[in-house]
Length: 312
Image 1 (cartoon, one colour):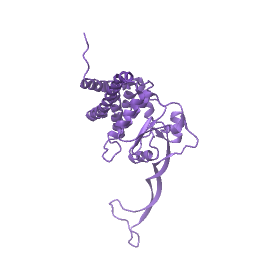
Image 2 (cartoon, one colour):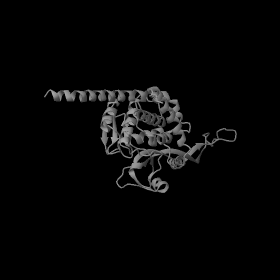
Image 3 (cartoon, helix red, strand yellow):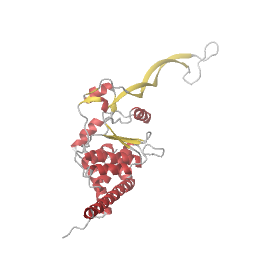
Image 4 (cartoon, one colour):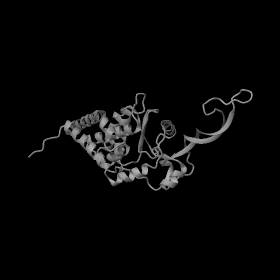
């Protein structure tokens, strides 16, 4: 019996279901338990410190203090690395003079009728500069990851690269200097930077991920999402678009999304499913239409080539 061709809407629905179920399955794996045990050792920073870290090192992924890298992770900070400054709380004690009161809360007066004072020691909280270092600035034992680098080759790799760049609203650059990240989107500089020299499938997937950040307006004036939600959105779009192009990024995408989600229900994914689906649909439609157009042009050229040869 001849198999009926899958419609675009059916394919979108199948990808959506796989994205939800396969990501949730990651939470039941031993790999997830190991990952969480490691991630729990990293300190959580205030929003102000997150801004400070991002402004000094846009590619920062995992940061902590000099000694913590050594004691908790068996890693050492590389020579000549400059620390990332944050503001750390500090408690201190000081002697202060305070007015005296009796048991009825009445002021205690001296012989001149003035309220007496006494010296007491109080604890205060202040702030001081402190320095942390990102994973890329250290060497040593590897940090567990839920995502596996994609090392497959891609048919028409250069064409796909060109078309992904075409759907990006900002310029795309390739550089060896992306730190520990495979790539990043800089809203302030309005550009995307991709690590050069990665395997073809990883390159395409990372390009789509960073392009999704830009198309979703992450880091812009109207950005209302926290970092976890933004990463889940971008990687979900990357998986979805890749799947529509018949590229399998599941080894990387499911683990990446699970690593950023706050809970086992992947609430960030569920709550933003419509936005993710629409963004993926827009991007994949543009790429697919351009691929079809180029295929038709190539066929026309091929059909006309023998005729031109005969006329010579």
